[in-house]
Amino acid sequence: MTSRGLIGVFDSGVGGLTVLKALRRALPHHDFLYLGDTARVPYGRKPPEMVRGFAHEITAFLVDRGAAAIMVACNTATAVALTDLQNAFDIPVWGVINPGVEAAARATRSGRVGVIGTRGAIASGAYQRRLEACGMTVWAQACPMFVHLVEEGLADSPEAEILARHYLGAHPDIDTLILGCTHYPVLAPVIGRVLGPGVTLVESASVAAESLRITLAADAPGHGRITHFVTGDPVAYEHTAHVIGGVDGEIVALPISELKAYSPLGVSASR
Image (cartoon, rainbow, N blue to C red; front, top):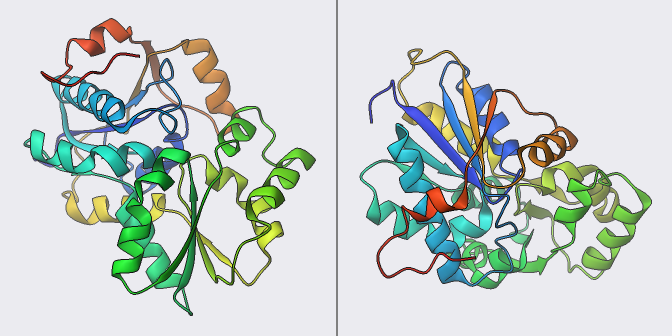
């Protein structure tokens, strides 16, 4: 990859914008393409093979638009598709799981670490395997309704605290918790209240962004521009994006039919 390449970022929806923010802070002069697959969200409840198909379509589309590196800003897609993407494309492809594990390894004092995420990410065991390989004792919990809370603007509501206590109330003795979904950092205040000050919350975005900053050339390859491709309703995307911190740049509607043209042979990427 040359230092003047575009960086492609994708997620099943708007949660990956938390990763994009971190990337833009670390690489303010780079240009970005962001793809939110809002027509097929959520990925967490879909079969792994289907998610792999979606991820391949999106990566091929972004490469065709000039992306010279890809950040998979989706924990579910990282868990089930990252290795396939790295093997299929001759450009750097990063994910958000290894940076989260790295952050947890730095933060833990006891080696007892928890991870929360979508059903798909937790069922894949991707975090658990990596953490256990580092010698940690792991507790994992799927929290599928957290995404809906964030997107409905209820991240700091009484309902959010009730749901957080439902999901996390029976947690074992841990000192670190990985927020294993890109939406979850928005819920950090309520999760922190439920778990108490003895548990450190970590997320992958800042660690991933720092890894890219080190890897990519230090000169200024662009102008800090961003283009958003959205497979669902662009108006709804913009509204939901503002709920989790805003959106800059042009928003372009992208029909699913255009993405399906990039479907790999033998992989079903239908809805």
